[in-house]
Length: 291
Image 1 (cartoon, rainbow, N blue to C red):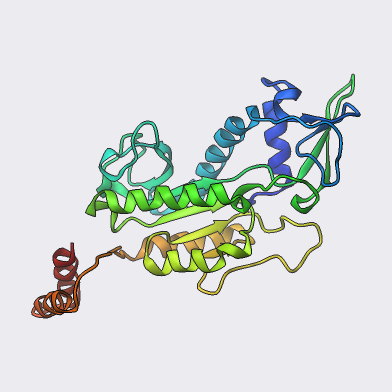
Image 2: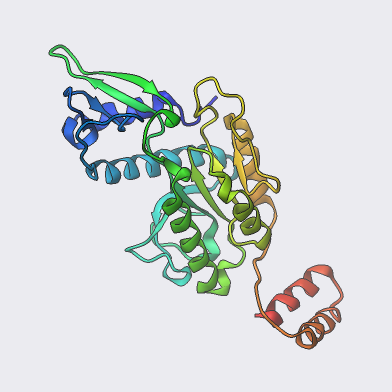
């Protein structure tokens, strides 16, 4: 069975990256000349900022997520395409989709070929120390995210706001985006201040879920959130659970609609749509008139 995000995934990232990037580009160096993924809580020594790792972990997580999603949809003959471009629904070259699920492998996509859009908001979750040795470099996990100063993944407010902003931009770009579900995929829980927000975003049809594919981000802590009340946030514990959710997401076509109209206008739209014979036709007419 396929594995979700875990410590081995992060070790793989560092082991791959260290082959072409320096240790100073991947780790902070403290006063004791120790190489750390994050500044530990309580550290009072000299600090520096580390920006060079961001693009590397971004590339790694998007590729990793694309490979994971491909395994969930390959039975349906679909493809997970990283870096997909679709100008019609606000996914230009300078801001492509992290991953789309499509009927083809093309980088340049048409809205009608896209089954889902996945925005990836992941980063290093645990704290790591790189042991510099003459024989080989060893990675040692020295704590979970509650032991270090960094807020990884979906715990970062700026990551949440960027994901929400991009999703809204897609939603309002073109009516062709209305049927395409959007998922924000991370590897951490979310903060309590976002519990009601993600549920409201799902209820409004803007984002269909903030999904975490890290089953155990905390060391020996069973109180980690599994899901919010309306499942705007959901943590997956194994690959089968994730695959079922993707199959459910792709199995039925839903439409996003949003408008601000008077009660009279809304009543006229409902009355006109209700003249159609079948439920699907009523819905199509309603969506056409409300837009």
